[in-house]
Length: 195
Image 1 (tube, rainbow, N blue to C red):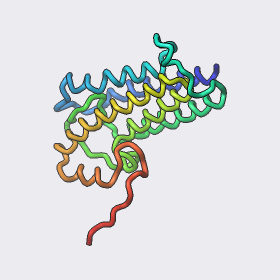
Image 2: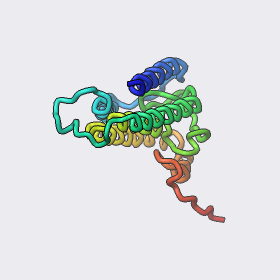
Image 3: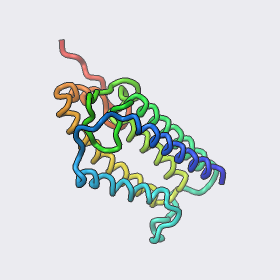
């Protein structure tokens, strides 16, 4: 079906952009340990495999939750496109501070503009929306489970990242956390500022 090919094309274009844009990143001063990295990478890979793999060995995982059809593929495609666009916007704003692993970069900056004014982890937010689109297009139980596993992996990773950020930007990052939600935009109620 055309939507599957378009979705695959979007994912491939995104991966290509991500790889190419990684070349301009700042030099790393400190990075998370291998054990820490594996604690979120392994679940992430399992979750993505559940969403995108064409067949799974256990029939119960292939239980259909959404009927196949052009409406689900169209909705999935739109969610995928919006999610990936949000990640690219975030990547552009993050600039040379970006890293695929939890790291401290030379001259690390706290970015609070663009998508970072809506959520502290817009790349994860965008990827969750994009993977939701892929899960809707799949329509099977395995995709829903995979999305939950990916969300858990991102929550694990963002907690590690936020520990790093609190060390690098003491006080400043805590204020940022109080003002901007982690993953879901517009979920923070505005606080009154004491006079």
